[in-house]
Amino acid sequence: MKEKYDIYSEEEDIEKYYKNDTNNYNKPDNAYRIKKVNEKRIKALKRKVIKRVAIFGMVAVGLVSAYKITTKPEPQALPVPEGYQEMMVDEYIDNNETIEDIAQKYYTEDVRTCYPDFEEYIEIILKDNNIKNSDLYKQNSIKVPVIVDENNHYLKEIAEKEKELEALPEWIGYTVQAGDTLSTIAWNSAANGDEAVENLKRMAKANNLESSNKIIDGQRIKIINPMIGTLKREIESLKEEFNDTITIDNNNKSK
Image 1 (spheres, rainbow, N blue to C red):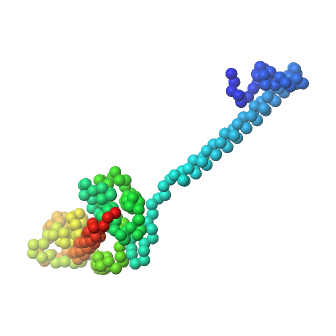
Image 2 (cartoon, rainbow, N blue to C red; image 1 turned 90 degrees about the vertical axis):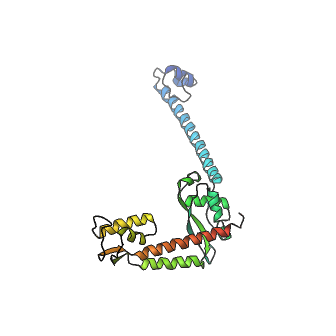
Image 3 (spheres, helix red, strand yellow; image 1 turned 60 degrees about the vertical axis):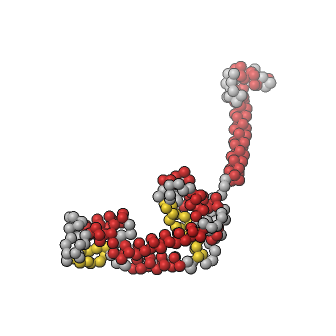
């Protein structure tokens, strides 16, 4: 059997769908009847297509509306109060810590002024670090947003040290003393072991030394300013004290 809206051209179809047209049905040439039947079929097909498109459009609009209603909006912080500032602090992760544990450490009363919903605060921490909760164990550290008083003395000290650091020349001349090695000089100019290794390579290259430790008393060489390492270590120490302060303050507060 043919589909309801097929185009008809066979004699039995003409007779089935056009037998009431007695004036033209008995004509020797069936071309007229074939044309008329096909026109009816095409019109019916068009009506069916238009109806289905309209139904599909209404369904699509309904789905979009439902998505807008059910989709949870992106969590956002409230404006920072006057006299305060938002900053990111580094939190080094212990093996057994969860994202909830980390967020709780920093969920002070000041933080709550901008992040009143604790669950949203967690979502923002994950988003800022571009990680999922399940990937936390892969991170050595993450950044956590906090709200602090602009007059916090740690922040002032850190800012002053950073200005001093920025003003220092990176390279200075140095006369090698008894017992000096390029490795010890590199350690003095760095904030950590990785930076010391990098500084050692840079100073060996800058002084055209085949071996990084082949320096002698009285030799004049270029070195990375050791005050850079000193200031970097002081800044890191202040940041750690600052972090400890805001987490210790929070230990006596409930979520």
